[in-house]
Length: 327
Image (cartoon, rainbow, N blue to C red; front, side):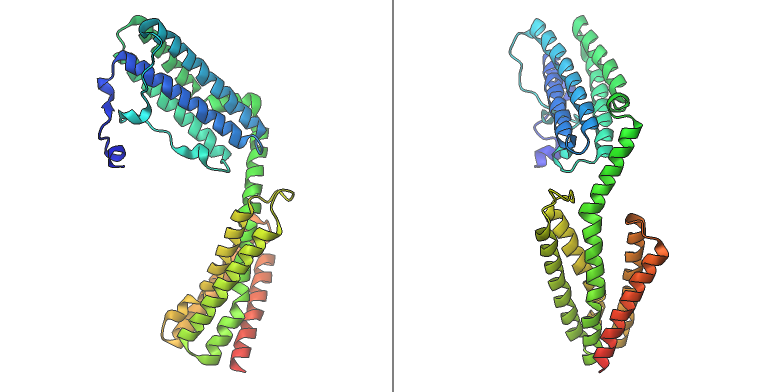
């Protein structure tokens, strides 16, 4: 681990021979081609047009690789030494973003442009080191090609994914984010914030014991979170509804449910009953308005209507808890 962080045991770029520079370029082109194919595979189901863009970019990298191999064979023979990015100190590395699913379409396009820019800088420096005329020419040509290709994803997008398609893909990505994370998370936050009001404040006013109230709130919040999480994950596998991974939806719902309840349970860790209660009431106020904001921002519910529904419902549950606690 330390060797990767500090570069111990790595070669410096200046120490590489022309043969080794060509070997490094070949392995880099191979890696980038695989990354672009992985991008295409990750985007194909949701964004088929953009997947075609990255398939074309992978073919472009393969053409670069073949040109480098042909030159290497002509100069050094068939044996290509294994030299990769991680063997060279200060050489750019590729973050494993292509392994993360789902892939963010805008982030992937940006990453592709950064990859091409890094490759351009490498070929510029490599060409400076080359003494052989044919090698220098090829590296210079590849540097020029990579400079042009810095916007390759954008240029190919004009053919395979024009602005109208890209906008449709962005809307599809946003819709999927809402279905997988926002909608179950919002349902959990509403359930956790509102449903725990009555037991927490009933316990508070019935006992006026902050520790006991906190335990009631903790158990109600955690229990509700577990229940909501399992319910969300179990009732829909997402295949027909298109709502995404049931595990992700279950986690979003369960975690937000627990947070919603813990928000006004945690103040009862304060020993002073009235201080804890006033802070808890303030937290409830913030929670309810946050729910209204999320409904307006992501679910396109008119803000005043969302605020009226949430605040009215929360107020009724809060009043019920206080009345029961004082009964």
